[in-house]
Length: 93
Image (cartoon, rainbow, N blue to C red):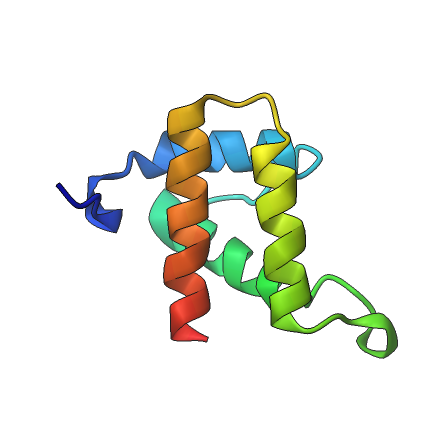
């Protein structure tokens, strides 16, 4: 049985993502929790939160993100969901 991105509870995943990444606010304004989380992952993988001269490539950022997720204290289900979400976003980049 395949796990689909649409099956995720994005409100819960966004809360878990905030816990892992230093309680980032990531306010949900006009969009949904899903849009906010996907955009945050995309910005993370493209290293848009860093100064352009010190940015890493998306593969280095992906590896760092996966290490951070697997080393976190969130539930295994949330870890798998966040890794799958990172995979989904990475595929689109």
